[in-house]
Length: 304
Ligand SMILES: Nc1nc2c(c(=O)[nH]1)N[C@H]1C(S)=C(S)[C@@H](COP(=O)(O)O)O[C@H]1N2
Ligand SMILES: [Mo]
Image (cartoon, rainbow, N blue to C red; front, top):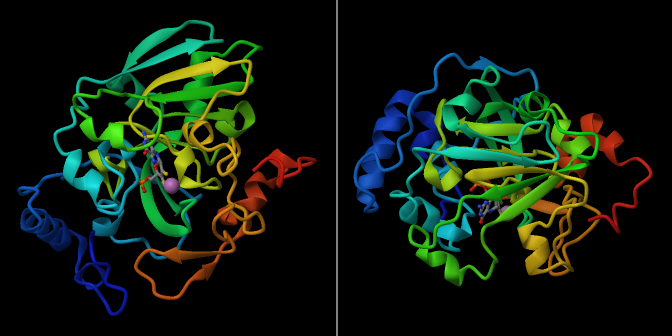
């Protein structure tokens, strides 16, 4: 376990980004990862999105060492250590199901589908911690429009790449793999829903879901499936991994909701990583103005 520093400034709060990147490489060495263990490649030509929050960003060091990626271990600091050798190139994404032309896209084709934007989003995990992350990506809607789903397509299903040889710790994760997730078509088409390829100006570190992951900022983090290898358009609601593992605790919708508690803990409060005092959780993670309409008439206690 990483011992978390709760009080006082860290040097990442006071050091300019360029210095910070160099020292972070030194730090990676210090905790046994070898230098530049997860340094990404800088992504050029990124525009800043007006959909970003102006809240203080969570330091890079936290975003890249406090992760959930059960294929690489269940401890928060495990993915940063265990995913370093994960091969993310070459990478293809299979597009299938209710779609005009099923096809296999290589990562370059995906990256060129739309201009890359920086989207600084609140990121809220079902375990009641949160961060603010400068993701890089483009609206998933851009890919969906290009793939031309048929009129039968009511949902979008996602599947993570899985290789038990590269992910030997997956067998202790207590989850069925490959990890799967899904969105209703209107959720998938929502302009806030991001197909994410990077963070902090660089390609995604492996532990954050390289080379391609989903980010749905009004939902709990587990909807943000990592290292996507398949996207399938379906007529019926697709399965999702945490729901398969424990349907009573994790539903399909998983909208951030302070008034619907997890059976084993409250969702009314959350701890922003790096802060000491808890914060109140906000309905739809603060994105209600934009997304509440997607759920009008639905009982969000039943559809948790
Ligand atoms: N393939 C895969 N995707 C995954 C997970 C996982 O274990 N495997 N964990 C999920 C959970 S529970 C969370 S909170 C987010 C964490 O994303 P982060 O590590 O970039 O913060 O990834 C989600 N995506
Ligand atoms: Mo999570």
